[in-house]
Length: 240
Image (cartoon, rainbow, N blue to C red):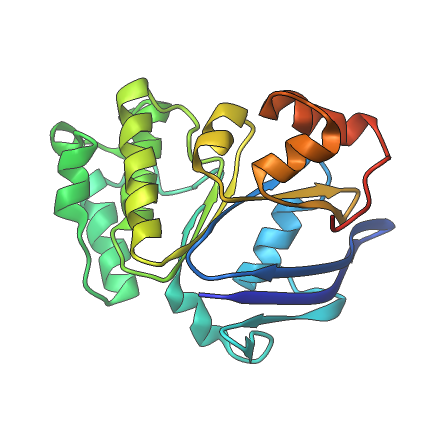
């Protein structure tokens, strides 16, 4: 699934969060959306999801403007950074509820086994650890076959085994030609997974390119220091 964003602006009160963002997201790639807190990452993602209405600009998904066509959302799987579900609902009840809402075929059994969630299906969400809740959220995200996947801090709370499972899952979805957008503060994870880096700074795209290009432009020998260099120098042209 391809996405085209042109001249996107969004302001909350006196705070201009997005300042004329132009962006093309091609199908079949993994994009990491990075930037310091307050750079506009969440607002950009929520604009793509239709959860935030921009003040100005246009977003098209598969060449269709999303402003008047909400049906495109059915083609997106979204993992929010914080998922708020009723605490007294059981895991299996939550899975059934989401299946009924989506009303489409799902593959939750394979994912439940992959993340070892069988012992927790009859437990209430309020009794689960943060890491187990995150595994449930990942199952909810990947159980439907959609061409666009958006993952907001997907590694939060995951143990090493679950993290390996998540990486494999993301690579499998990419191999199917799906488009994946990821935000993460874990630079090692980003370096392993991302094809393209989108770095936002003060509501604008400050860098767009692959990891090799980033390291060449910043003159750094490792990815983490290259990312840090973007916030401490101003020698790099926007939309490089």
